[in-house]
Length: 108
Length: 108
DNA sequence: CGGTATCCTAGGGGATACTG
DNA sequence: CAGTATCCCCTAGGATACCG
Image (cartoon, rainbow over all chains, first blue to last red):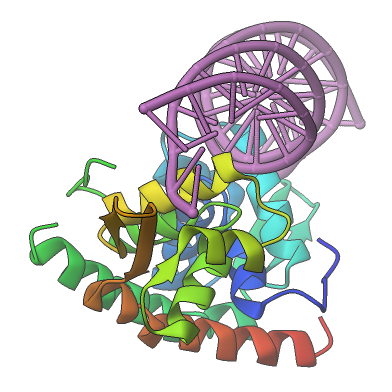
C-alpha cells in the first residue's frame, strides 16, 4: 500500500488492519511471541484458505507489521512474527478491546 | 448489526468503523460537538453522495455511535450528533492516530 | 511445505434521478 | 431538506486445483 500522506492517520491504520483475517493472525502471532510457521497459522485458523492466508500475510508484511523468514533447506520452512512496530500496535488494540467489552456489556 | 458475542471485541469494533465515510463523519461530528445537520455533513464531505451519507449514518446510528433527531416542521431538518458512547471512542482513536503518526514518520 | 493459478460471487461503494 | 430508488462496477474474499 502506497502511504498516502494526506490521509488521516486513523484511516491509514484502520486500512492496514482491514481484512477478514488480519486480527486473528495478529492475535496468534502476538500470543506466541516467537516465529510461527505458515502451517501453524493454517492449523490455528481452520476456516482460512491458503490463498487468503498468503494474501493477508503479504499485506501485513508490506505494511511492516510482520516479517517473513524463509528457510529453504533441508525441508522448506517459512516463519512469521510481529515486527517491533507491529507488536506495538497492542497499545491501541487493547484500548479498542476495552471499549468493545464495555460496549457489549452495556447491552447494546 | 447483530452483536455476535462469540466474536473478538476488536473485530467487532473495527467492523463498526469500517466504511469509506465512517471516520470522516465521526471527525466532523466530534469536532463540532453539537447537533449537525444532514446538509452540513453533505457540504463538509464533498465527495460523498446522499445515498452513501444516509447509509453510513444509518449504520453508525444502529451501532449506537450517533443519534438522529428529526424536526419535521416548519422546514424539515434532521440533526446528528455523537452519543456519549460514540464520543468515548476518542480514547482509542487518539491512540490509533498517535501510533499512525509514529508509523508514518518512521519513514515506512 | 508453502505457496500460485483460476474461477466465482456477494456486497461495498458510486452516479444519477426522483420524492414527501 | 433529507432522503429513496435504480443501475452498475469493482474488489474482497472464498473454493478448488496444481506446483517447485
